[in-house]
Length: 95
Image (tube, one colour):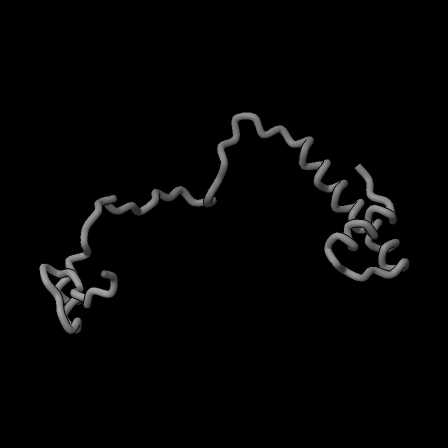
């Protein structure tokens, strides 16, 4: 795939970037070089290669996935003007 000057100008317009004719010509060469490198990466044989998250073998630290109330209910309602059974008490506003 190759990019021409018109494509560079169109992409610049879509990105709301002002590009002069000289810059568009320069960017055409740069973008074609980048796309050429990406095409080279497509030629690499990656069959049987596992994806990496790190070059050093590591195991993830995991915690138990349990639902709790955080054991902070008393601390949360401590400053409330009125509370009952760890719930905030508010005045009735709708009849």
